Image 1 (cartoon, rainbow, N blue to C red):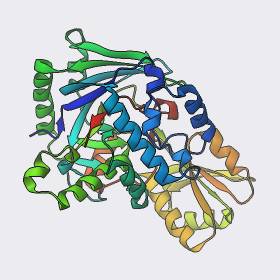
Image 2: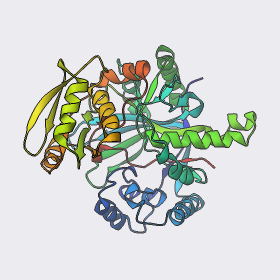
Image 3: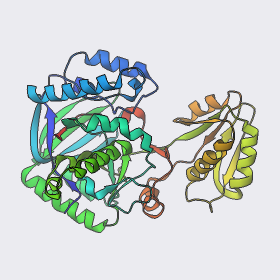
Image 4: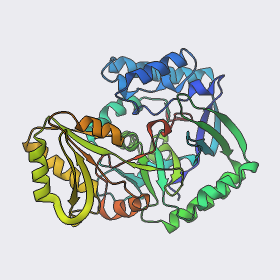
Length: 404
């Protein structure tokens, strides 16, 4: 049986799809003004904004009251008939980004029995980054009593021939376009086509073929690792109080995702840099040189207020420069003062490194082709190894699925 499956997909039938669709809740978490603007734009219109808990608000509102409101809004939308249901279907998606490139995807659901987020998992669907378990309980409190789910998980396949997405794009004339609109706040444009009936059954054969060829690990979670881990925890909790027969048919057993091909030219990997502040930067650099460097290796550019230079990390320590540096910083900061943070963008890193008692590290980008072999052989990547595109290119909430 396939682990990526068609789903009963809910599509909103609303006056403004642009107001309905908002970016993933974990984006712009340190920029509350972004979410304030979203709130003002949406107003009282039906919107996924009313069904999510932006991380930027975590410290600003009463968590229990916010979750109650989310659940009430979800149930209200169901009762109002806002959603149109497409049973046992997929949705083929084309997302036009700001730079004009088109990123292709497919909405479906995965069987959580085939997913394990633990660090050395051997499951068919695996996490790409180490799960921070303390981030899961607040998300569980939202999902466990939620009547619907709205996915922002991007699931990656390692389809070097691009057969899956080529097959779908070649069948667009046989599909019905069910949405086509501009996304708010520089999110680009999105179009979706319904894949149902005979087309869905024909595509299932394509998926079966791909999963058989990639039997060991056909899928890896690109974005939304913690959201999918939350779905897994909720399902495991459900299993404790239900029979095997009930578990086999439970909505909780599945999670909706968007499938994308890691080899899609529009899918870009960007490195995430490291900054350490409030530290003795010279002592840190000396220790890094002594313990992790070699005459030849992975070049890592570093910056302080007064100096800059290049260190060569010893390739015998790991296949990835980020793994060597992250492991060093984790150990070093256990016994030395300093605060580490993750930075997107070279200029932002350089600006932060100009402060007193700070050192910033520019890491080389991870090649996309390295991801599946690394996870298969070495387990999850260090946290914050890469970013899939810029913040405005992240997944926007759109489709939903009833889970209670």
